[in-house]
Image 1 (cartoon, one colour):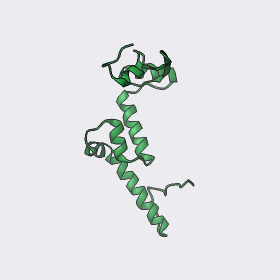
Image 2 (cartoon, rainbow, N blue to C red):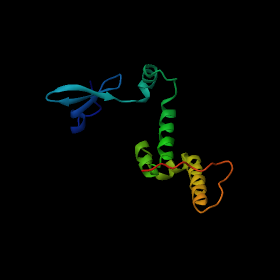
Image 3 (tube, rainbow, N blue to C red):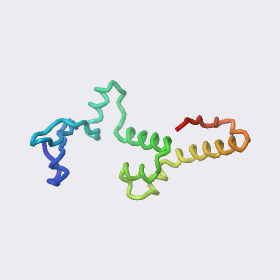
Image 4 (cartoon, one colour):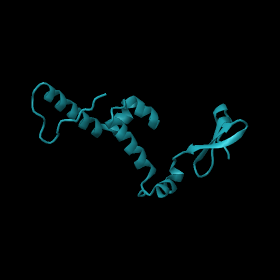
Length: 127
């Protein structure tokens, strides 16, 4: 196993060629999980019985799902590694517009109005 550079973090965890991550515990390396990266996406999807998609598509889908679940755009920007929030906002504008429409319809319904016919009111869950 090799790491790109020798840092305190790299001395605690390492990944081999197939994406398996190992962590150092009690002077020995133990398998700790799996890293999904562009180079091992195909084998990961095959093992999971999923259709093949590009790594970038998985990344985009993840960001879209997070945004739809109410995760702050700044957090998504950081997870994706975008240098500026504007990049993330531009790429995911279509999702934000749909969420804004749902928010407006939810407010309208709460105030006793009617929702837009193409956009049913969001379902609410108790928290």
